[in-house]
Length: 437
Image (tube, rainbow, N blue to C red; front, side):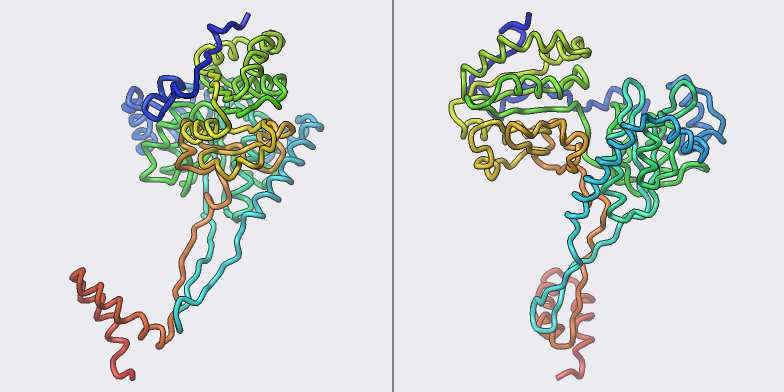
């Protein structure tokens, strides 16, 4: 049975900014232990290109490829559509539709405003030209992550999108991954995984083109390579184990709290689950009723470890206390299951994504609601956003002055240039004003 000794319960006043890590063990990426190895992989790929990535694929994935087999062929794409379950295909296409709708709603028109008489300034938007997406392989196949990472890039207008994913033992990429990519007209799919894939996309090889930005989740080797290469290529938010935080009061259905908690920690034993409640009755009902749900789960072994090591129930004094703790923890996923849940949304300042009310489980956002499931973890929601349209757009500022505008701005600009000891800056202004009354 799950006991009070297995599920930790603490009082909210025990937790503060200084001791948070004692209660919530977040496995931040520790790259020092593998840095030397990852740097070696990157150096080898930089030196030997395709030859190196083929050697690493054989070494780490146990798959021996020829250079001509690195890229998925058009025949393999066609075969994937023939193989994929039709019901799943329709579900992926439905999710794609909603994702595109949500991403398009984020687009702002280019704009200009009048700053002063004769001075107009604004912003224009230009997509990145080529980006790389990393899709993990191994224990599970996640076509939904292809959708989530490709949709904002597609809507932003990125001309070239490539995908790297480790090959299976049959030298193939899972058909579900291929189809999800092809739905966004992505045909440049490469059978390469691990740190070597990140190096190949960041540096370029004969087969794999160099990209401007790499997005997508991966293991510690992938994330270490992304961090090490972050001065060479832009990367997305550092990724770690998934997290859910549920704020619940006595109006919440404890059954829903239980199933939502388990739904997010079933991915991996390192995943983090947190419940913050003002109701001792709700907490007791969770404790008394979680066991049957756990025993029915096909992933019970993973969940048991996560419950034991990374799950916390916090008894809060009131809703304001729940809000304080949420903003301190900065969870990846936040579910709000209280009376009038919308009332507290304005007070939430740190969360990767918010799910409001009893009918909005995180699982909807994981798949088909249109919102993105690539979100900051490990407390990074305090300073990062989830993957969105603007991760793939450059914002270019535009200034347009006529002679009146030049005159208006010249005095203050020249004074600052004098102070900073940059006479050529001042001269570039004064030269334009010569013989101008």
